Length: 110
Image (cartoon, rainbow, N blue to C red):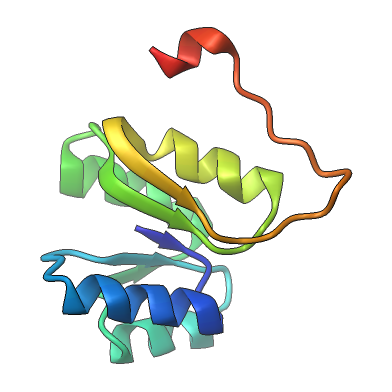
């Protein structure tokens, strides 16, 4: 899954496609960005409030193998973390603000 479908998100989608990703779910609140994501290689594009349903439908609730967060906000980083399968890979690309903190309790890591 790729959270954020601006220029960096579209580039991430294209990179995933080139590397052979079978399914790429693009997530963005803006419909025109979701449409662009589909044109540039995403296999599915959803609004943020539809991501949980996509996770359930596509992964059986386990979470995605790879999730890229390219927005740079703690809220979207949390969403990305929550939708990555245990043992999966979360890649935070978006550079956030110094005062926007992302918190994880230690139990969540295991």
